[in-house]
Length: 356
Image (cartoon, rainbow, N blue to C red):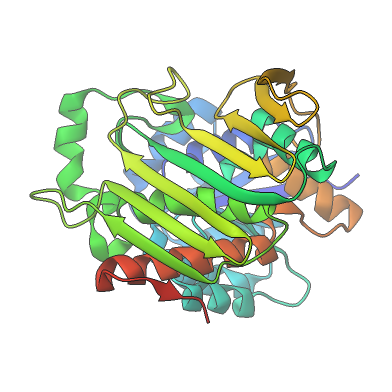
C-alpha cells in the first residue's frame, strides 16, 4: 500500500495542529514538510509532533519543491483560500482545505477550476466526523423520520481565540492580547462568526436535506462595539418544502466540547414522520417517530475507520479511487457556500436575497 507524503502549509487557522496530528497518527502517512510565512507559528507543531526543523520552511515554494508531497493541507484565513489553492495547485498535489470552503462562491469556483484534472480538492468540515451527526444522517437515510422538512442548527464556542491546536485552552489575558492582531476579527480577511461557523450548518444541513437548495435567505448579524466583524448571526433559509434556521455564536457560555452551553450546539431535524436531534460530541441522538412519539435516545457509537477523521477518510478515498461523499464533497460544500454568500449579502442589504 502507498505511503502518503503530506505537507501542511499556512498556519492561519489553529486547526492545522489537529490535522497534522491525524497525519502523525496515520500508519501510512508522514509529515514531510510544514510551511508558514511566520515561522513562530510552526513551533507548536514542531514541538508536539517531533517534526525536524529542516522540514519547516518559511517559503511554501521551497517546501513543495524539496518535499514533493502527495497531499497538502491548507489552513489560511477564510479570505485567502482561493489565493493559496492557486499557489499550491500547479505543483500537482491533492489538497485539503480547512473549512470554510471560501469567502465567496466566486472564490470557491475558482479554487475548483485551479485544480489539475487528476487532483482531488476536499473541504474539511470537522462536524462530519462527529458520531452523533453521522448517526442522524444514517437514520434520515433509512427514512426513520420521513422526508426532511426543517433543519435547525446552532454552532459556536466562547470565541476562536480561547483555544488552540488540540483544544488547548488560553487565558482571557492571552485572548485580549491576541484579539487586535487576529484575522478572525478582521473583515477583509473573512473574519466574524458568520463566515467561521455558518458553513457548518448550511453544509451539513444540505447533506441532511438530500442536496436541495433554498429559494431565498434572510440574515441578520449583531454589530459589536469596537469590532468590525459580527459575533452572532441568525439566518433563515426558505426552501420549497419549508424553513430552516442556522445560528452562529462567538461568546457561548461554555465551549461545547467541554460543557454544552445553553442553547446547545448541534442540530434538530424535523421530517414528515418524526424528528431527530444530534448535539455536538454526544454519544447518542434523540428521536421521535409516529410509532414512538415520546422522545427516546438511540446510541451513536464511535465512528469506525475509514471515517474517523478527514486525513483517514481522504487517504482511503485516494487509495480506493472513490469519490468524496457528504459535506466534504464539492457538490454539498458548494451549496453550503451559496447559502453563506446569500446570508452575507442579506445581512448587508438588510433584506431577503434569492439564490440565482
